[in-house]
Image 1 (tube, rainbow, N blue to C red):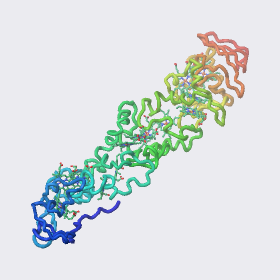
Image 2 (cartoon, rainbow, N blue to C red):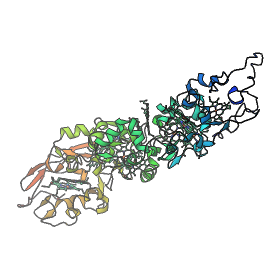
Image 3 (cartoon, rainbow, N blue to C red):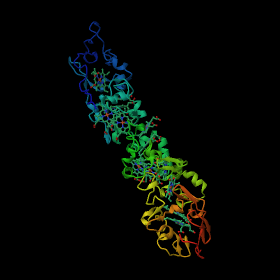
Image 4 (tube, rainbow, N blue to C red):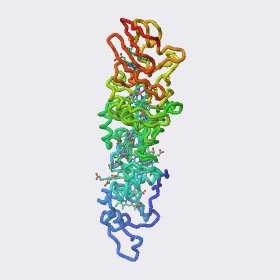
Length: 458
Ligand code: HEC
Ligand code: HEC
Ligand code: HEC
Ligand code: HEC
Ligand code: HEC
Ligand code: HEC
Ligand code: HEC
Ligand code: HEC
Ligand code: HEC
Ligand code: HEC
Ligand code: HEC
Ligand code: HEC
Ligand code: HEC
């Protein structure tokens, strides 16, 4: 910032301007060739001396009426001095209400009584007796760096409307703002105000300060953002920042072009979690409505899978893909939020199935004999235990269940994924048991009331 211009010295003092009004004799410098002595008519401007003051674009009312003595005292003698009746702001507050220039926050030059740093007491170039042609030019005399080097400048600042947001004299708000910061912004940005009022979920920083993300004058980034996503967001969301760094399984939209803003609305949303669109499941399905090729293989078209298979798993019925997946990435394969074996066979340990056991009882897999823990039993022989609970080649849940949806009850898969071969399962449920005829063994049945005698035991 430049130092405040000193207007302490009245320009023209030393030039012996002789005004008939004050001395009743003498001539104007520069008019020496004209011998005619102007007669004082009770007005310095009419005397032909200071007429210039009344020809300015905006003339101060007391000057217009020739009331020079409202501010100047007559100095007797040969010295033609326009001595001021008082100094600083006091001169002005003689007529202008002093309260206007007081407040919690008072502008630097006003504190110093430098009214004339911005106003010409006689007549100015622009409305408000300004010493400059525009408000912006005035402000930039002292604040010449405000818009420097900003690639994206805010609309009102770009057209020099500094006073659309700032009081020139004093304010009860910090930084001389016209209103509390958020109110100031939403008075113009009524769409943001309406959206945050109407939508169910509002991002907490939007409630407190728009400036936690935006710069008021302009910034190096679009939308005057102080940084771009994801950095903007990760500054506050450091747990997610940590996860992005360490995640073994990453989800590319999190860091791709629009990053966090691909899925989140920065201000407010209808859906929980500030998710864009009506729900987080709709969001997931807006991309997972096609097969997606990845270096590790082609991902299933989940939307089509759900449409073609009417038995939807509980969490999917309630629209909650994030019950099992972490959209930001994580330690488990397939972005799973908790442990789940990633292969067809796995040694059984309850901790390996935290994903399923978060909602289902692990007891279903823990003892060979039971008459309550699971419906998947032949008499009291627990077939979950038989298939899953093995020290080496325990079959994982995917051998029989589809985590998303299936045509069969109990989310039993149509086909068992076995290497490149998908073995048809031909599952049939009966009121007291069921049967299957897979490619891995002969047809088997189970019945909880009348145990089936199968040819061999798996
Ligand atoms: C509202 C108060 C006010 C009124 C009314 C006023 N002046 Fe001034 N005048 C000032 C102030 C303040 C200064 C000192 C300006 C500065 O410091 O830049 C000044 C300075 C001057 C100067 C010195 C040169 C200059 O322009 O800075 C002259 C000459 C002058 N006034 C003449 C007049 C005349 C003639 C009238 C009546 C037509 C008049 N003034 C009315 C406040 C006033
Ligand atoms: C930093 C520059 C600046 C300083 C210093 C300043 N003003 Fe102003 N003043 C302005 C601007 C800008 C306006 C608004 C002009 C417009 O209408 O766009 C204004 C408007 C005014 C107005 C007319 C509008 C209103 O608010 O009633 C008066 C009277 C006024 N100022 C008096 C003063 C007095 C008295 C002082 C010293 C105590 C002072 N100003 C100091 C910039 C300043
Ligand atoms: C003798 C009384 C008087 C004094 C002293 C006085 N003013 Fe004024 N000023 C007025 C009047 C009267 C108006 C016109 C008010 C109106 O239009 O509402 C006015 C208007 C203004 C305006 C608004 C001009 C416009 O047209 O936008 C500004 C700015 C202003 N004065 C600044 C000052 C400053 C700065 C001082 C001190 C250097 C000062 N005044 C001293 C009487 C005075
Ligand atoms: C004559 C010089 C001068 C002019 C002209 C000027 N300012 Fe200032 N401004 C200052 C000074 C001095 C400060 C106090 C700086 C500080 O405290 O660091 C300041 C501070 C500010 C502040 C910060 C206030 C705070 O509470 O921190 C804002 C906002 C501001 N000015 C806006 C403006 C606007 C808008 C204009 C044009 C209408 C303007 N200034 C014109 C000298 C000026
Ligand atoms: C859209 C509203 C708006 C406009 C227009 C605007 N400002 Fe500001 N200005 C602000 C806000 C809000 C702050 C407070 C920033 C903060 O607290 O971090 C501010 C702060 C300032 C400050 C204090 C120092 C700083 O940068 O924090 C100065 C000086 C300033 N503005 C000058 C100007 C000037 C000069 C203009 C015109 C070119 C202008 N402003 C236009 C809203 C605005
Ligand atoms: C005086 C009215 C006004 C105020 C106050 C105001 N703005 Fe603006 N803002 C505008 C205008 C006008 C535009 C340009 C509109 C456009 O390009 O669509 C704009 C543009 C923006 C943009 C960029 C929009 C885009 O599509 O590029 C953002 C972000 C913004 N303002 C944020 C803010 C914030 C934050 C505040 C409070 C510090 C604020 N505005 C205060 C008038 C205002
Ligand atoms: C948590 C950060 C954050 C906060 C807080 C925030 N914004 Fe934004 N804002 C953004 C981001 C990010 C964008 C860009 C959105 C995009 O590209 O889709 C944006 C865009 C905008 C836009 C232009 C696009 C639009 O949606 O109309 C305006 C205007 C805007 N913000 C105003 C505001 C206002 C006013 C506030 C305070 C009430 C505010 N913002 C608070 C991050 C934020
Ligand atoms: C100034 C700090 C700040 C910034 C910047 C910020 N946030 Fe937030 N955000 C918060 C706070 C505080 C909460 C509420 C507490 C929490 O959930 O951590 C929150 C909550 C959230 C929530 C959860 C909302 C809910 O209802 O569960 C999401 C999603 C979110 N932020 C996304 C973002 C995105 C995307 C960005 C970048 C555009 C971002 N945040 C930038 C502070 C911030
Ligand atoms: C692929 C879409 C997607 C992307 C990209 C994404 N999120 Fe999320 N995010 C979600 C979903 C879905 C939720 C859970 C919403 C719910 O149901 O509560 C969520 C929840 C959150 C939450 C609140 C819960 C928590 O985990 O703390 C925050 C904060 C959050 N996201 C921030 C971010 C940030 C920061 C980024 C960018 C680095 C980002 N998100 C990128 C989809 C996404
Ligand atoms: C913007 C598009 C987009 C959205 C929205 C989206 N995804 Fe993805 N998702 C992808 C892409 C592309 C891949 C392929 C792998 C990669 O690029 O990270 C993928 C991969 C996956 C994977 C497999 C990861 C692996 O490595 O095996 C899962 C699981 C997944 N997404 C779940 C979700 C969930 C749950 C949601 C909603 C919260 C969601 N996705 C939202 C684009 C999206
Ligand atoms: C009950 C937990 C659960 C829920 C809820 C769930 N998933 Fe999954 N998802 C899984 C499991 C487990 C896998 C890994 C399947 C495997 O490896 O056999 C998976 C795999 C995926 C894959 C990768 C598919 C492939 O071909 O490798 C995508 C994409 C996916 N899920 C998206 C979604 C979407 C979208 C939703 C919401 C509509 C959703 N998931 C809901 C558990 C779930
Ligand atoms: C977020 C909780 C949750 C998680 C995690 C979860 N499930 Fe479920 N599961 C449910 C709900 C709720 C039902 C529906 C229960 C009902 O309709 O009685 C259900 C139903 C089932 C059913 C059908 C039960 C029946 O009686 O129709 C099977 C099979 C199943 N889940 C397997 C799994 C497997 C395998 C996993 C791990 C990959 C898993 N679930 C993870 C909540 C969950
Ligand atoms: C060999 C095939 C097979 C495997 C492997 C398997 N299940 Fe099942 N599961 C079934 C059958 C068949 C039923 C239906 C029982 C009935 O209702 O007749 C069932 C039923 C269920 C039910 C409903 C409640 C119950 O126990 O009756 C849940 C929950 C369940 N399984 C979860 C799992 C989980 C979790 C895993 C992996 C840890 C798993 N299943 C592994 C075949 C299997």
